[in-house]
Structure formats: structure tokens, C-alpha cells
Image (cartoon, rainbow, N blue to C red):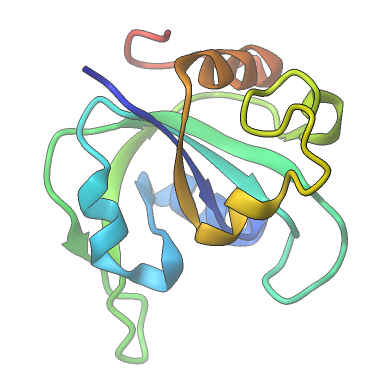
Length: 145
């Protein structure tokens, strides 16, 4: 049975992962990626365009399905070898979160809706994944919810 997740990273980092066909979370840590399994759905939320900037992007920036295989280390140069998982990224439009706040289960009715985003990776319901996918106009490679 598939699970569905939101991962958090700057849009710049997400775009790099989309181009390379992979995901990374929590500054390249392996443990969070071990919770994610092949066939799981992944949505990236980007609070900013570039790490450390305060541009207020607050958008879903990628959506896809995790491919077969285990987490592995990639080489980003300078001795940085973060853990990754391969993902089939869907064609989708980046979409602001604010219009969805009252419709998503993990944010609806919560004044501090951004709290779970602080963890970098957390599970969401199939309904939330489906709503985000629909709003992004995603064409998922695998069976969608």
C-alpha cells in the first residue's frame, strides 16, 4: 500500500532534483528517506525560491512517485554526498499553497499550518495528495490516488 509525503526544500534545490530524477530531504540525511518506499507519492513544498531567502514563495514545486530501489549517496562536490531516492517526477505546474489551506487536511482550520513543514518530511493523506496533484495539473507516471 502506497504512502504519500510532503518534503520541504527551496525551489532551487527541488528543481535540481527534478532535473536529476531524485529527491533529497533534511540536508541529505538517510534516515528520513528510509521511511519512503517505492510507489509512494512525493510532493515538494518550497517556502522560498533560494535557501536562506525570505521571498515568500510558499508553493508546491514538484510531485511524483518514488521509483524502485533503496536510498543511495550522490556526489554534489566538495565532499558533500547526500542520500537520495530516485523519483519519476510528473509534469506539473508550481502551485501556491495559500488557496488550498482550508481544503487540505493537514492545514485546514489551523492557524499555525506551517508547523509540520518544519520536520522536512511528513506523511499526508491520499486525499491531500490527490488535491495537490489535481491543483498542480500533474500527469503522474504511476497510478494516482
